[in-house]
Image (cartoon, rainbow, N blue to C red; front, side, top):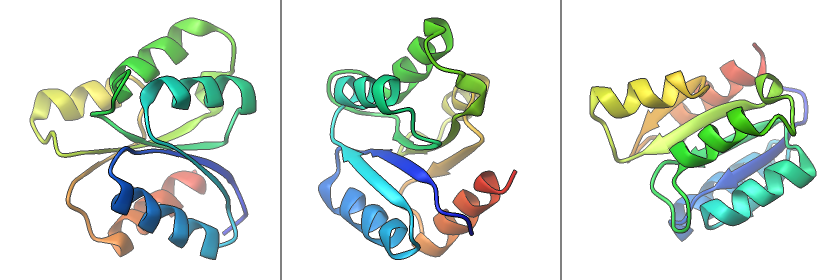
Amino acid sequence: MPSKHILVVEDEEMTARLIVYRLNALGHKVEHKKDGIEGLKYILSEKPEVLVLDVMLPGMSGFEILEKLQNSGEIEFSDLKVIMLSTKKRTEDISRGFNLGALEYVPKPFKMDEFLLRLNRIINQ
């Protein structure tokens, strides 16, 4: 798997630590932000290639981040590969994530191996 610049926006500390640890171990450059506002600022300034995005975040939701990115014109949003994480499992929430540009929507709790398989699939698209 080629090394990627990945941003993890996740407010659950243990989930974030585990994801960051595993992605670092695979050789990726990984950054972590705990709230939506900091996450959006990082995306706009640093332009990561892959975004692991929780839906429910302090400051700004994952859905709001994707809406702002689509409307900003500041980055080539179509180049950003997004995988969403959420305890929200309703069809409407999953559809909203995909409609806002997510390539994967992983319900929490999740198995790390399954998450990594899905992430690998979108990286290699």
